[in-house]
Image (cartoon, rainbow, N blue to C red; front, side, top):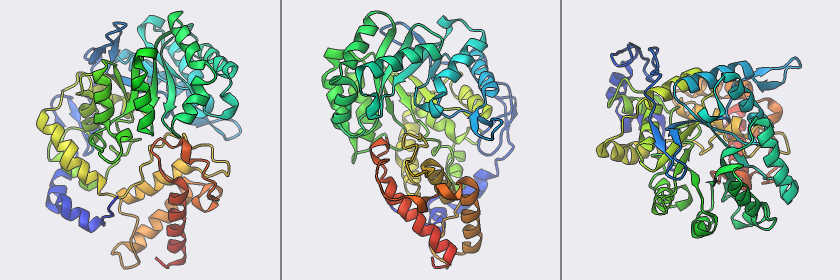
Length: 463
């Protein structure tokens, strides 16, 4: 990715345009009957009966276009000071989502330190809604070698039913195939007979729809497509967004390629990471200005959701909504969906994508698949802090940078606050155990080494 300085970036987006667009803070939005800030966050009412739905052609399921990803949940502290899921807040979010038309909830045995399914089961039960009012998606997340045995996979499925307080799963996925090529697919699903057993569970009605989520080597995706007549995938979950829609360098990250292959076979598409782990909402002010020139009243995130929701074969779009403001914003976007025009889609795929790609952030989605690090690093937190500083102009190129002193202080103080010292990049020993688990195929050890070098130069004053 080409590096670009903040000064160069101002030239790209236009200082005057940025200033004008950002001045829209606090404008009145007649549609929402409330105020909006410059990022497009409303304080008006959220529609309760205008959710857009898509129909699963096989089952006839009427699925909300907004799906709730149960991976990034609000935390609180237990009596020993450890992070735990804030179940009270989670229950409120779940009930609010259901009350406003969301009926698709996506979880996994691997999410939230193994507590996501249990948390969702509690929240759905507490909501007062009937089991037939919502759809549960969970995954066969047998990532470690100790889970490759058939009995271990079967036990994982049975635990999912128990935690989710149900006797069937609406949408069951082989979790994240593609990372590491075909070998893990054989170990996790084929050689042990587990995939055949899951097909049997579908026939028995314990699984209503069987599919997979894909990250990584496109050869694995192509293999799955070639075997569609054998396994009859009911749906497939892919990562797609306007930045990577036309990724000619890597078909495995090209939303267009993956989407088109599924459309050819009439397989419903579930979208994950429409915001690239939040990176398409947490953009620099200059990129915010780029959006505000178009629709000052709309949030930056809403453009990404409208873009991918405008694809007709998309069944639902997942979002990990940690806070109520995220949920409310996404509800407004899809209640109802205002499809993008052809010109708006091209504007996002072309000019806007180019603008975002030119800013040197790391392609981390904060999915935590790389965790836990055997040597204690908090890999996602390190990347999140670095990307945040890039967006705020706090990654100076040298001591000659105009804002060097301020940026240096912001980076170093923020680093220590965001990542405990024993979990920072300098503790990476380059073991490379994290690399096969990264859906974005980031060379994590190399990035750790680069960030650590940058931090040391800031500390020593040698940048």
